[in-house]
Image (tube, rainbow, N blue to C red; front, side):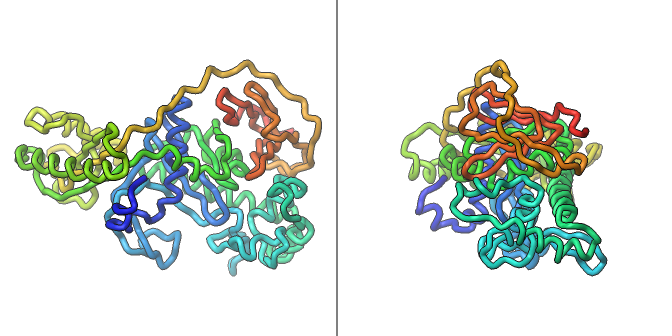
Length: 450
C-alpha cells in the first residue's frame, strides 16, 4: 500500500501489483495457521500464479520483465530492476483454450477466451473449448448454481466443442477429451510450481498449498497431487483473495542503492551513512501514507562471488555494520548459496553490489487459529455424478454448500463444496474439514480409487 504521490513518482512499481494481494493473503493465512513453508496458488480466468512463502513472507525479487513479446516466455521482455513479490505465471486458467497441434499433441493455453466471448458453455459466442468447458463436462461445475444462477450454462455446447476440436482428432469422446484437457492443464500448473521451487533451491513436498481465485479451489487437489503436496487450505471468500489480501497490506516503501565493495575490505562508515540516508528517505515516504505509525525497518545486502552475474539477497540483523559482521555475513551467504547451488565455492572472494532498505508499518494483528476442532463426518443429502480424476471412472460426489458448514464438519471425497464465487473440488483421495477460522482444509488421506 502506498500514497498517490508515491505511485505517481514511481508508476513502474504498480506493474503486476494486483496478484501481489493474493500472496499477502496467503502469507497472513500461513501466519495464522503456524505454517513455515507454503505455496500460494492463485488461478483465475487466464493465468495461474504461484508464489513460495517462507516464515509468513512471500519470496521477493529485484528484477522483473515487462512488455514481453510472448507473455509467458521468460527472456522475451524488457528487464526492469524493481522490488516485486516473485511469482511464476503461466497461461493456465478457466478460459485457457484447448486444441490439438500439428504434431497431434493435446495443448491447453496460453491463448485464452477471456471474458468475451468466454468459454463455450457460457453461451456468449465462444467457439473454442476451454478448461472451464472441461470442468463442466466432468461434473465439477454445477450449472444450476454457477455464478449464483445469474446466467445459464450450456453443457451440450461445451461437449460438442470438445469433441469437434479435440475428440475427433484424438479419437476420444467428449468426456475423454475433457479429461485429457483437465489432466494437461493441472500437470502444467504442477510442473511450473516444481520448476519454480527447484530454481529457488526449495522443495514442494513439505509445503502446504493455499488456494484461491475463481479456479484455484476447483483445481487445487488435482494440482497438489501432481506436485506432491498433501495439505491444502481454502480461505473464506477465495474468489476475491487478492482484494482481501490488500485489506491487510502494510504501507511500505523500499529503496535499493548501489555501492560496490568486497566483503573483506568494506568501508563501514560509508555503508552505514548510506543506510542512514536510505532509511530516512523511506520513512518520510511511509509517513506520508501512515502518519507517525510505528514502522519496521529491514535491511539487506545483495552478495555474490567475485565476477558472478547473479546476486543473492542476505538479510542484515544489526543496525550498524562493523567488522564483527563479516564472518556471520560470510556464513549466511554460503548457506544460502548452498541451498540454491548445492555447495559454496571455497576460496572465492565475496562482493556486494547493492544495499536495500524496506520500511513498512506493522502487519495487521494476526490471531492464531484455534486448535483443530473435534471432527464430525457428514453424510451427504445430495450427490452429483462426476468423472473421477484419480481413476477416470464415474463416481458420485457429495454435494455441500459452504455457508452451511461449521467448524469441525468433515467430508470424505469425492465432494464438491459450492459457494457464490467458486467451487472447491475435493478429489477422491482427499478429505476436507472446516477449521476454527472457517478455512477448508483438504488432506490427502484417502485411498481414492475403487
